[in-house]
Image 1 (cartoon, rainbow, N blue to C red):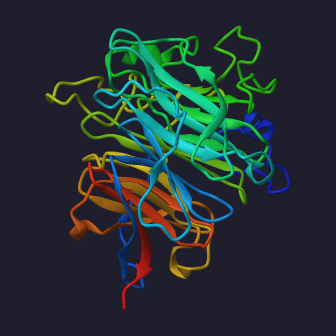
Image 2 (cartoon, rainbow, N blue to C red):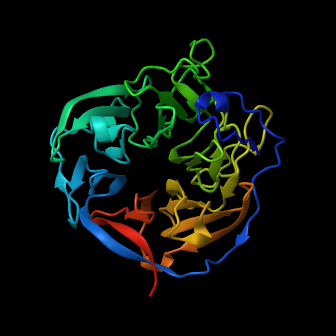
Length: 383
């Protein structure tokens, strides 16, 4: 796999662009591991319609995006949310709707919020990013406008990506799906279908993007060859950026992101079509990155988090994947070198699909359940 580490003194994405891939060794083989402590889920807030993203406010409380087209404000200590006025008008159909919500790195001083959502109509829709100022009472988006809309609209309500990640250098990452029926476009960096893109806070193109000149790819494209990335996280200690995406039937992946790299879909894959037919017999090819980890059968990944807190000492430095299939949270045990050494399925007994997992400012991990009356839960040690 591509396994390039960055120096901790340079937390800029320009260094990622200079990263050199190590020898491809294929995806990791793992074994089952067990946590030293037992954990359970504690309900924090409920009543959300397919909760998708969670953003914790510095003054307390949180924002929760709901796939049915709303973003809700949960006041400190409250157990339910209130819909925020002036959210963007989302195209709600199939997998389309309101996606992620994240805070600007300078939110404490500017109160800027980013919301990703499906924009358009059944005939032409795609992923967009809306930027607005959150009112002091948390109930209204002010001066809102789209800062990004995909170049390539499509006629399918599926595979939008939509996960966002503010980076330490001030830029914003957005994941984009390939629209399901348009998989071949994922191999063309001149299309933004099946890509990860990087932009400035106003939506403009950073000059150090890999295709910033527009000659060999769209200026905002960071990497391509993706199917439907649903998780993205940055490790400030190592400079690694991890992405996690849906395969077809089998072949869900965690990848280490490298600027300008091709992640293979659909030219290479470890999965097959949902009817069992073969997409390709190739699992690797020159010039295409190998995944760090592959799941066959699929776990249908949602959000991805890297745990850096102190609440769960035996989990520090591990990756956590929210999973829709199998109704679980998947812990990926990493050693000090960042290599996968084992996996653990958590909360299968809870019986819910998990959409997002995120570390709160209190050091706890929080998950959302992907259901019509969904909730936000805190992971706590069992008594």
